[in-house]
Picture 1 (cartoon, rainbow, N blue to C red):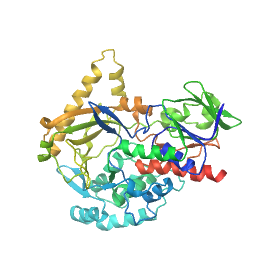
Picture 2: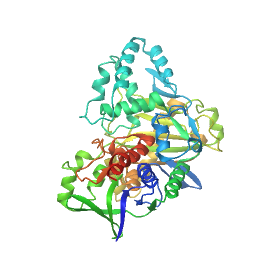
Picture 3: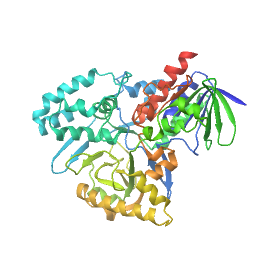
Picture 4: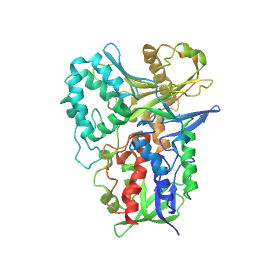
Length: 473
């Protein structure tokens, strides 16, 4: 029977980061990834010879090289990856757009947002400054009960429109609760998006994953693809190892799961062990929020119509911004429009890409997918993407005639390829902030540990190793 000091379930970003950090010091570690390639929620696939990304729109937490204490730079040092090898490309300008009501532009220079608020909401300038003082002083990673972020912000910002506009990007980039979020999550996202900002590495997510995988292997780390975990094994209130889908038992001293909180609970086949891991039933821990995402490739003629100075547009057409599972299959009243080519000094290809994201109802899509009429699900995708394009035409102009390729994926697609229950991209609303579980040698990393975004996912893996594994050695 094989044995490792550390086993990691999942070869996504947090799993790779945890593996790199542990292997860097000569420790033996194995990552088990159920799919044929790394990445998890942030991966890629090919259609008609083109590489298309999943998950990655933009990365938050940009920092200049001089800011040694910034999360991004600390992360690169922990992973021993020279910053120059990543070749960061900053966003140009992003926009929060509530058509007919207001818009706010922001960039990686936080003063832009402050000036925009002063121009659009002059009566809220002092209130916004007071809120910033509280945000700057808040320790978002300290263990504490959940606190309503909406209540916190409403104590400062009396203008409801400004409040909704501030929440819109934060919800779409990390909200696991409906219509609200924990204050700690709000502050993490506020800093990551508004005070630090968006960037992308040069190239694609495949290049970033390749860099991480190579670093992991350079340090001697092992990874096995198409190797799912069927069961987590326990002995004397500790994790003794795992059983793979193929039936092999692998023992370990410590186990890090990046599969998600409810997904990890399902890996305990012994009811007593599952109950010890979490007394909460699955419907209390499974996230409800998922998305319909469409990817469009346009010919170069579309440059005459598409905005060249907007990296991401967060829009809302309704009187109130609603962030919840919609009653219908898709909520077109709000969404995210991302132009991955609109980053500074990005290399221009022969096509222009656009990514569009809307909130979607998992159950509606699941019923269509399981319908005896196999034409229902693809017809439903076609119908909703056409409706989405009509809405987009009102915001950025009609470019349908310039589309050379399009694809879309639904909550069912997300669940099938990532094993995230109900396709919940941001996981459970119950976050395990310190990563600890009932079992002293089992830790949760990734989205359900509470670190958000790509930098957050990577930091989560590093933090679990630093705080819980190394201190026992």
